[in-house]
Image (cartoon, rainbow, N blue to C red; front, top):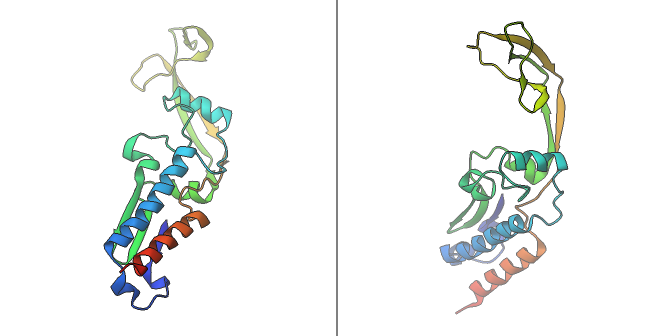
Length: 189
């Protein structure tokens, strides 16, 4: 979360001189920079792997943008909030977007091993039914199907490496723009 608190700036009587208008201007700059990072997919974001792109296209999300898989306010980009107050300017991610931090900082998601079972449809002789046009693929069955066989399986644990894709970054350029706005605010008469 990008956060500026007026206590951290050494200007005499800063709090009394600060205003909601100043915080709104600072928040606006930080928010627009964050949206620009999303729109430009970077800087320096690692591309998606071909397998991920294929899966996203199959699920109707398209190959890009990288971090905006869900539509509207459900996705990470739609969950970016701005909160100016008289003494702070905050841009961050709203609650409920659990994966926000791992994309900002990168990391490893460790999936635990598990066992489960699936039900596959059979014909009256007990042979597995195959999907039309796909001879090697079987047909899943609901528990209510009478002609079925249960197959147990075990998934080994594995790790998913999520590369760092910073979207809340306080760059020197942004710092300079904010410093300019703050200086203008305190030097105007």
